[in-house]
Image (cartoon, rainbow, N blue to C red; front, side):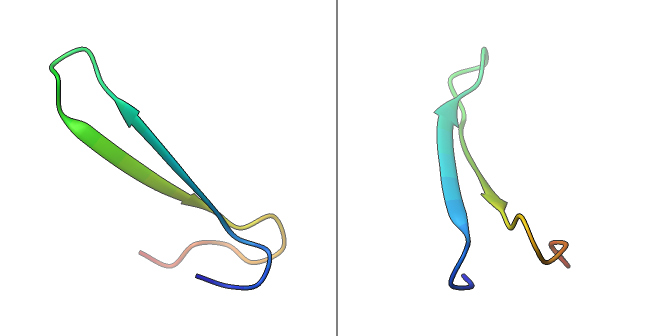
Amino acid sequence: IGKHGLIIEFIDPDNIRRSATYLPEVPAQE
């Protein structure tokens, strides 16, 4: 995770835990 990254975690409607990385300056390359 870069300096300016956030990790967003949430439970989707199927009760699966998901996470997303948000980098405001650099596009995620995953």
